Image (tube, rainbow, N blue to C red; front, side, top):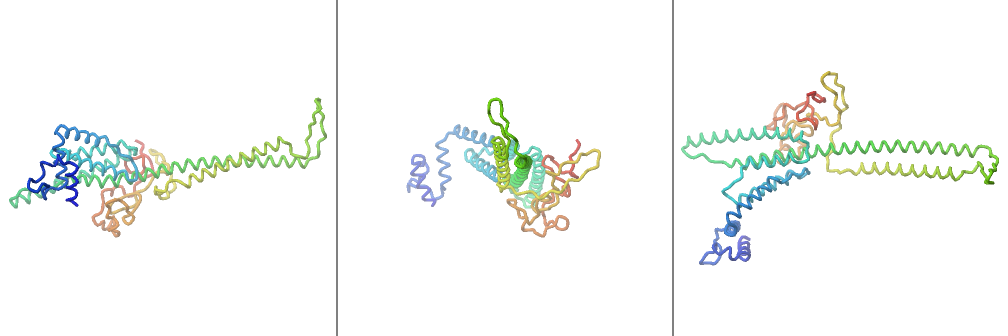
Amino acid sequence: METQTKEMILEKFPRGCLHLLDSRTGGFSIDDTPKFILDEIQKRASTPRELNALHGKLTTHMKDMEYKPTRDGPVEYIRDMILYMDRAHELLPDDNLPISMILNWMLAAFDRSGHSRVSLGRLIKDWNDTEQEFLVDVMTERAAEKAAADAEGRQPIETDTDQRHLTVFQRFWIDELAELYRLEGTEIQEQHHAKLTHQANLLSDEVTTVRALQATLQDEIQALKAGPPVPEIHTSDRTLATIGTTMTPEIQSALNAMNQTFQNELQALRNAYSALATQPAHITPQRPRSTPTRNAGANARTAPTKGWQQYMYWCWHCGVNISHESKDCRKPYSDARKHPNASRTTDPEGGNMKRERYWGKWHHPSLAEPQPTRTFPTS
């Protein structure tokens, strides 16, 4: 396969390959890989100025690239950033982009997205804690390696901390942004459900009114039919006005209009319920929420039950959370289901204990920090 690739490169770029061909065999050296050959051709074909210009355009594109909140958005966005990082390194191998700058570009893109600013602020705070723990671990490892190298009389071994830093960032934000998208999607679904329910109630009231008017009209018609005939009344212009036992055209027209209005309102009600039943199914419904309780405190106001969720679950991978236990974890890169017997209180088996302070507290999408009760802070 590699030989065929080299032949295709030679056929496509015959002049660019001249300086790489072996003078004895007329072909490439067996040690030259197709990637090496293409890199050498590009170096010869592009001047340093052109390479710098391409590198500048690529880094500008990386900085301005937008993140779109979707189900697979975090995976796709970070994957594209990593591909662009590799491409930038190929253009200028000696001018590596600092990993901290690239991570800041991605954080800025998350901040510009359509996610709740309050929820993103909470995630950024958690990420800063996670990043700080990672950097402390790196410093500890370097100190241990330096001490071991000094004791053995050798040079310390340098590890690729940038790649590890990127991996920690990738795992944290893919998990958290996917969960945030699910939670915000559920909130939108509930708002839409409430709106449709309100509209359905209005339509139901209108249908009830139409039915009452129809019943009243029918009673009046029956009363007219049951009454004695009224003598004919001759008017001055010799026209005949009668009120008899038969239904007049005016009454029949009014009844037909009422019936048509009733049918239209009933069809609108059916359409509304049909639209409600065909909502997108990709959003996982929330757990049933408990009924609101009254808070007698003078410095807090009772918040609506909608939106409040209690931190009452613990997951080996996610830690204290509002939705699932270890056996139900569906996060990427999660090994939680390998620890079904791990316990938060007795034996966490090395699981996530970073959010232990959240246990028993209440989460609301509009607040950055959990609350002891389902009440909003006064300041």
